[in-house]
Length: 186
Image (cartoon, rainbow, N blue to C red):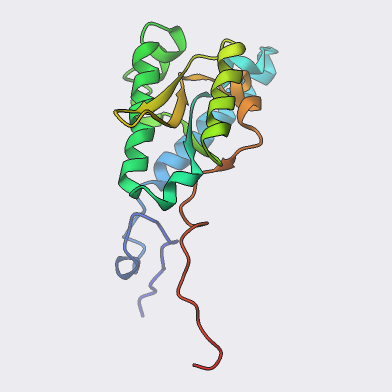
């Protein structure tokens, strides 16, 4: 009698394809590899007594306005974030961190965090704070409407800029999407 082993759920494989052990999740080897290389880097840094900032992850932060989700199509908001991200990278194309972030060896492992602020006042305040502290970023202002929609930093080591974004929430459309109300009376 043959035994069938179910494969753990993988977001890239449709549920009806997750039946036999021969169906492998295409992202699991990459996740395992990253975990092993991260552990090896941490071990190496610990044994050599090197500073942990050597292995500090390069991150790009993208911040969108929450209030626009009710009046703008989702695709337009995503596009605004893309505009800001590309502009921030292009404006800093000769920066050593940007060059490392966009290097061929790093193209498949870029790190971005997409966050949200409540509205226009908050995004302008954040931009002013970043500008005052010398944090390179692009505040994207949609034209011809002249609406500040989002901002993106250039790639930075996470430890350098994470405190500026610590209190912001991850951007999610799920908080505003309401499911149909089910009434108790049927």
